[in-house]
Image 1 (cartoon, rainbow, N blue to C red):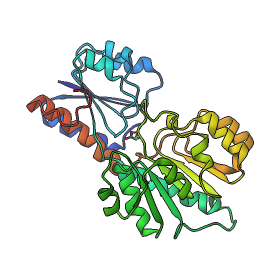
Image 2: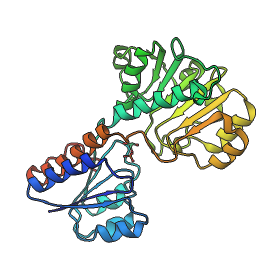
Image 3: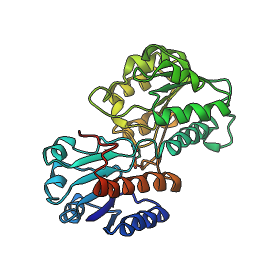
Image 4: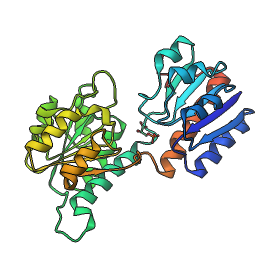
Length: 306
Ligand code: 3PG
């Protein structure tokens, strides 16, 4: 079988080499398309592949149509909003993700960005400390749990809201349970978002929630830009002078924010949450192993489109 790693944002070299070993060591053919500049390059690279490993790369209906031999796609990561599941399912192609494999990397970035902001970008001004401050974790999946664990070391007062997670799990992780999302935002000066992007969550964080946050609030978004209602985000920036927005990946309204509220924002130019050697190795190797195992035994653990 031919297994293609197609990553516009490449994995660390060490991860690529280990993926190659897993693929070729199991008797499969390894192919690599990194750092590609157009969707056309992906379309031609998939034409004879049986399996595909991607990161945030868009697996559109066009990609699926260009890959007549494709049997399985694994998103090396957690969020799979980049996979067009209907067209994969229609062709009987298995789609999987590798949940949890890059969660610590994303959680560490939350604190990297938060500390950079709290210390005024290390530009000489007096900053603030995290100890004793309220931190709200919006969604308590793998990343949220890692954020909770790290926040204990900082001595923060941690709250979490997740209707899909048992309150016992949240309490056992040292966080206090909020019974609704409004409670979380109104209690916490800093809120860290860990929602997936789906029809329930897209544009779900809007004016009322952001306005309900306490004075000098900081919203940290290392999840997906789509979960924020950006029109309402702009209104919040207009209405309150004490609101800060930190995000891993620039929002659509970045230019307006930069022009008008440049001192209250912090964005990464490229999504950096999972960009560590460890996360690349964890997620990339998990993806390769899941494909090899699927071809060998038919194991469909982590299948997204049953
Ligand atoms: C994820 O959903 O796993 C993260 O957002 C990482 O995305 P990336 O692999 O494109 O960096």
